[in-house]
Image (tube, rainbow, N blue to C red; front, side, top):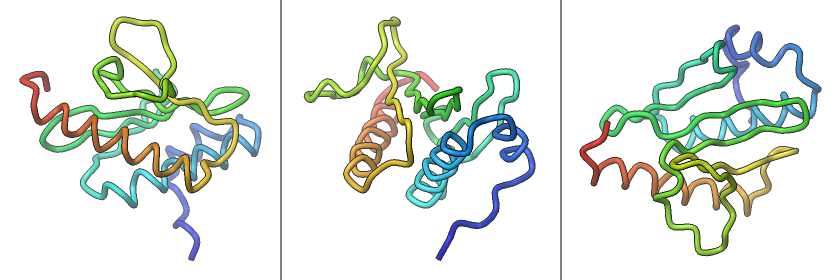
Length: 128
């Protein structure tokens, strides 16, 4: 069964992107919405992103479609366990995963683990 059509604001955000980037973004979006139905989704046109907020811990992650791929950003990525060094970034707090195509099932498992850890981190923290 295929995912339902995304809302207009998601389609508008992806309108000028190459088809492969739009597909990858929609697949990642579907994965996040299916695995975490409690997430509140918000398209931020100024940031050019689709953001995901957990009702109890606040902002967890965001999808940032780019010209050649999609970046899945974790706001407090530097605090996430990453023994395999998969997260990218050099900033003080943010880390991300990069995708040039829809995630494989193995990558979906990695995403789920990072999201799970990000939610758990938010639950342990006073930062919201």
